[in-house]
Amino acid sequence: MDKALQTMITNMPEKTGKSLEEWKAILKEKGFARHGEAMKFLKGEYGVTHGFANTIIHLSKEDKVSESDLVSNQYKGKENLMPIYEALLSTVKAFGSDVVVTPKKTTVSIIRKKQFALIKPATKSRIDLGLKLKGYAETTRLGNSGPFGSMCTHRVQITAATEIDDELRQWLHNAYETAI
Image 1 (cartoon, rainbow, N blue to C red):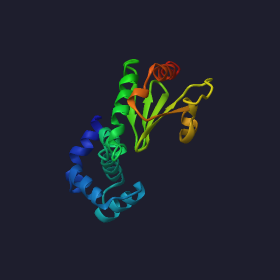
Image 2: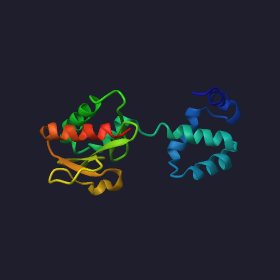
Image 3: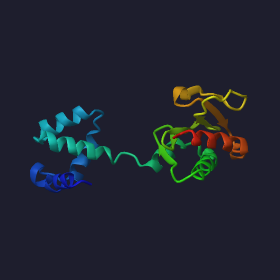
Image 4: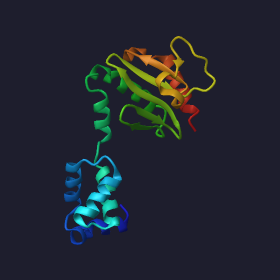
C-alpha cells in the first residue's frame, strides 16, 4: 500500500468520524449499485469530503469476492465438474510459471502475456474450454467458439476428465505458445 493511502486510512477516524472498517460496513449494508450513489450518500449524509468518499468506496469494493469464492460460485450445483476444472488447471500450470489463472464471475481466464484459454462450466454436465488457436480448422471436437465469440477462436466441450487427452493438451500448449 502506498504511503499516502496509508496516511489517509490512518487519519480517516479523525477526519471523517469513522474507521475504514466502519465505513465499509455502512456501504455494505446500503448495497449501492453505482459509485455515484455511494459518493452522494457519503458526502450528503455524513459530510465526507470527495477524496475520503472516493477512497472509502474504492477500498470497499476490494473486499467483494475472493478468487476462490468466484470459482466456488461457478460450480455450485455443478460440483461433479470440479475434477475436469482441476485437471485443466494442472495441465496449463505445467506449461510454465508465466501462466496466470484469473477467475471471473462466470469463467476462468488462462493468461500468459495474452489470454489463451477460457474455462466455463456451461451446464451441469459439461465444461466449455475456449481456445485461441488462429489458423486451426474446425473439427467435430474442436468446434467454433460458440458463446465465447471473439474471446476465443475455438471451443471444446468436455464432459469427463478423461477427455483431457494428448490431443487436447497439445491444443492447449499451442494456444499457450502463441500467447506472447
